[in-house]
Image 1 (cartoon, helix red, strand yellow):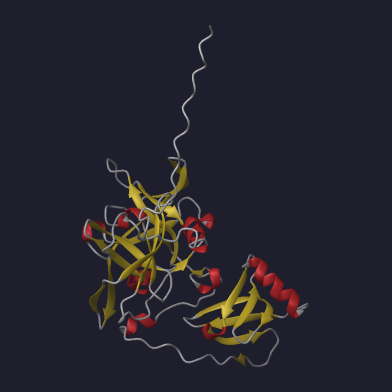
Image 2 (cartoon, rainbow, N blue to C red; image 1 turned 90 degrees about the vertical axis):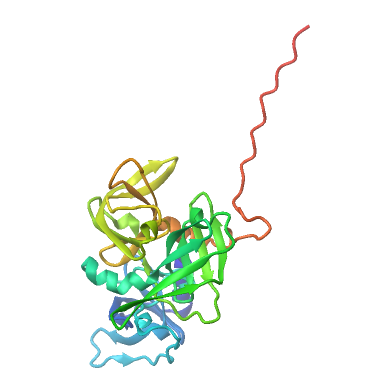
Length: 330
């Protein structure tokens, strides 16, 4: 994505491009240097990265020293038969061609209570004949992340979504769920809801776990033991807990069976990890897959594409050859 943006900058000859503030839907904004303006997107350099913002997510473009804002006409929003709470989404200023959202302008910290109201409907319960876990939508089109071990060996998968409507909790179960990609060794799975009546879903923003500091406040939303929409809060205990050669985020937020596949959030409402395990004989010892691993999995999802002819899908190591005995000397 970075190389693509640089190419756009050079081709369009944007030397001396002006600084500007892009006001987005969802009461968010991005400030930086405009590299390119096209009919369908704006390319902006925010200092530490380059963002490609779809035009349909832009409300206004405010240039420095301009007396009035330049209004940008956006196409009519897509309507869906979802509850009104589903309309609260943030813009797709992201990598991977908008398949998921990443953090844009630095957002202020909020309370867990405020964030749960905004993010709760993006967290789901994933059910199979053998058990259940959690998951979360990465975009409005029904693509969601969960753990590989939640759906391992399963073909009958349902997803239960929770909506807030008129102060009441409503649930909807979607049973036509397709496995898109699996990474057994990363314990990640990408699913897609394909029910005909599926609306546009609320989704989350993927953050950057590399920017976290030990002691930062975090919280998890999931369905431990089937208790849906359970919220637990804690701190980031360490960023570099090595377990069987893999680095995990360790947190004091309570993680239990059923939380697997659910999101671990920072106080800006960004997903910084995917909860997947705990130490059973201790308390406050939960672990999450860093969000960088999730981004890598999504960016290379074609390489992890699910194969119906090989349901387990991951590669297998061959047994090493046995050491041959030297022939006995005569």
